[in-house]
Length: 446
Image (tube, rainbow, N blue to C red; front, side, top):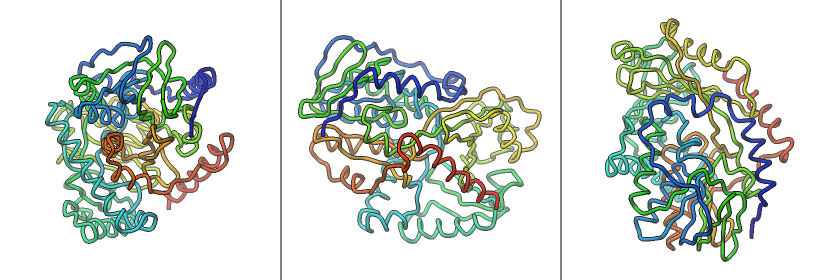
């Protein structure tokens, strides 16, 4: 199947999408303020040819481009803004074991064998991230340790089930159930009654990790072009993409735009929903005060459906996230609402100034599993990490690179995960999702 989207249609959609982007933008983020020097990349001009053209300069696209270039292929990467501008440079920075769904649910979809492969891929994703950080000397504050924090007794039932599944069914020995006293050893808050500690998950500075991947891709010979938005593509036997000022012809295309793919491939747009999420960063609290909040420097996520998550920064701030917009519109007073959520966990921060407030879009799928597949024999895609993209996006980039080189077995495991379109069509799917999420928010209150 061949997909073509003409420039005027895509530009109109992009204009609408950007008007709906969170006002708490990338430029207001603590990540941007603390970013490492970024490599400079030109705008695409004229016509070029290559083996593989990658669309998207986040974790997925950068990893795919890097893996291919390291194996001798000629790769061009096109980024509409700057590398790391999207979710890869705005997210909560949490590296989380597994997927957004329990493995038992995944087994019911794909069977035990493929579920086991998917589990192993998730573990490889974390190892791949750590290996890249070490090999390329990426200064991104990589730190191991993460906890799911339980707010109510039914969360502790979920903790027990999750620990049993991970430890007993999948042989993962890095998790430990925590009671109220145990969670307080890691999270000095009265909000939680227990939790699950995972020493194999962790956190990092997400933008600096993306910029490190971009520098590594440069060094490997990837030709990176920024401010080069793809406005049309052809996924046929001789694929090409075009931007406002240039065109690339390639033997293979990789689409790695995730929530920012827009209307380039209309069929794919129906399988993901861009969701806005937000973070705040306090003023520097000082080392002693920051350590008093999170003594072991782990990342934390609560277990509500509409969850909150937080961690310490290297300069001793508290980074707190969790505000979500499924409608594409900013809620009034969102910065203050985020601060109040933070004070619900740490009321002692009432005197702490909030220095940064930002947001961006992540992509979710109906089943909350990554969506990998082919538009055609020449064109692959990956997106929809549903909150687990810091690790899984890199693994998606790797298996797409393998498939381009002719070894598609691992890619095909991901591709066999069943996916559905969001119901309601373009006009009604967002209201339908907003109503569904309202039900889950009400359930969080029980």
